Length: 229
Image (cartoon, rainbow, N blue to C red; front, side, top):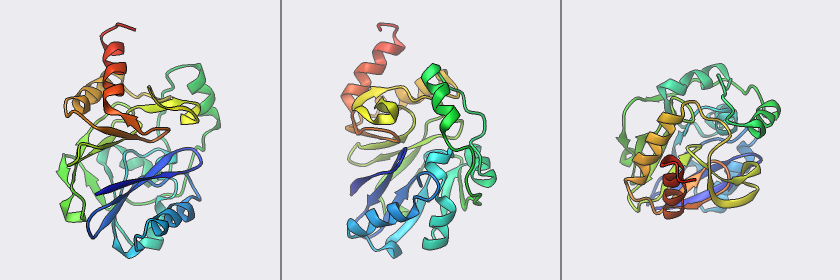
């Protein structure tokens, strides 16, 4: 199993290669399908061997090209039921910035994207072997109510926007753990972090910046949650 980062204009998507099948995690902003499929082909993956488009959550920078990818690939799109309305309406819902910088970011990010009907609604944790990948979907709300992460059998985790790397959307100091700009519920976010940390993650693949070393994230956020910083 191999995780390949797809660096897009304002976020990361990921190609996860299994032994014979592969999945995509997240779909970038609008008009990024070409870039995503280019990386898929460069990685030696036949688009016909893609089995699933899995969303860590429903914001525009992670679901903006979902409709186009579904048309071109003919694969199902999966998202947690609490974030499904974002795909269906092509909107971000209520976005809660955590500081002044986040308010600026909120003002400039796209507000809408092409609507798409989800094919698979996630309501519980489940394995991904049916899609050709040795991993498990975990429920990790906090950034949004329907945020999920994917824990792989080698202890790597794709966590979406549970946290981010660095500042300026990951453009600077991308390997340093940091809070994301938007947090729906801080208590839920911290509970989800503790859940991931309890699984002793090796590498954390985030939606912006990264990847992060698991031990760095544990040390950084444990201090913050304990009030030591």
